[in-house]
Image (cartoon, rainbow, N blue to C red; front, top):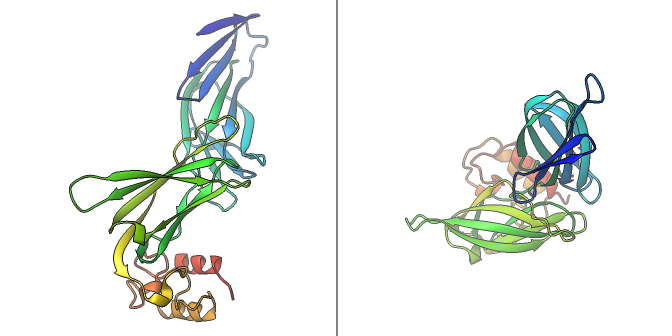
Length: 281
């Protein structure tokens, strides 16, 4: 659709369910070399860094407002460009990027509006046994409803099965969903999230995907409910746990599997980082 407005043409294009591109093209350029401008408007994560790249190079990086909104403009060269937009929340988690390829005419002001980046997402354990819980969490727009799709991959050839679990983001945009091994079958699982903003009811893109497995192993009674970093299951993450971690440092598949906190097959700096996050002293 093209609308003529006082010597300008306004071109609208719907490139997804809610993302709209509007280009204002001067019929008669007011300057010999008029600026070519692109404007990005949407929702990311509250008070966090948003990065926009052009053809693989950083075009601009800004901080979003407390409600996760952004509105940023940049001058670019005319021609075909691929823009990528991604955010990093206050915990440093980087969300899934959104990509747009546009051909921009000289002197055009192009606005990409309705962008809603998928939530950030992480899981605290990659393997859980009976009595243990995997926590899937992240950040999105404040007070949003978050649908967490959990897909189950059984060994049988019946194919994957998916179920949606509903979580709520707090006023800082943080959300989490717990999955207890006792409520799940022994299988591999993948989780991804999608948010609905409460005011406009806009729906985000999907997040990245995280994975974990339910092993079917039995956890000692004293370890039921203990965080993974509490290696000796005494209710505290302290120097005793740190000593156990050091004993098995750089071991693969250690004799004490709880020393491999993230269950990736090796005791290393990732396990240490998780321990520091849960440190009680």
